[in-house]
Amino acid sequence: MKKRVAVYPGSFDPVTFGHLDIIERAAKIFDHVIVSVFVHSAKKHLFAVDERVAMLKKALKGKKNVSVDCFEGLLVDYVRKKKTDVVIRGLRAISDLEYEFQMAAVNRIFYKHIETVFFMPRVRYSYLSSSVVRDIAHFKGDVTKLVPAHVAKAIADRRNK
Ligand code: PNS
Image 1: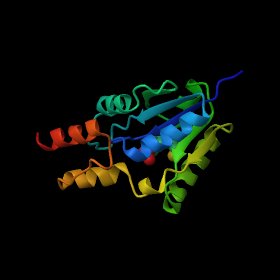
Image 2: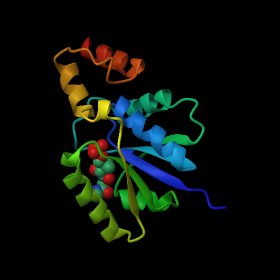
Image 3: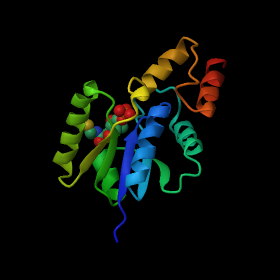
Image 4: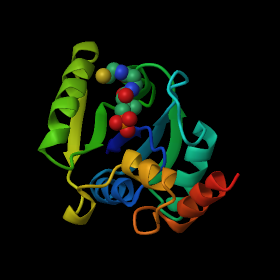
């Protein structure tokens, strides 16, 4: 039987408990989930792509049907290369919908077979985003309830540099 493979793309700068919640849900439904960090060189990031990939790998260690990768260029090309047509995205609140709707629709123009599947994280993470984490970190706030311990440490190390 054909394996159901899905790509979960994002910036993951850094990975949060909200992302991990989505991955856990997706991994229950799909045979394989590829979590892939988008390489956007023009954008300013807190962590480099290889650091974000390493943080994701550590957070997902032991999850047999989840792998971590990165990609450049159009998502549709990457999805095709991975021989799948499913994209996973998290939907936290209605405010996410406009952006997600636009992305899913644009992706479908370029690859008509693509399907975007949305997962809703638990309500406790519905306010959580990487940018909230970066903001709290910037003002030296405590992020330990928002991200895995190794990510919180990486943020603290970066802050103290
Ligand atoms: O975590 P993010 O920043 O919301 O993720 C956005 C991401 C990386 C999924 C999106 O920007 C993307 O797919 N970029 C790849 C370039 C692309 O295909 N753009 C066209 C879709 S609008």
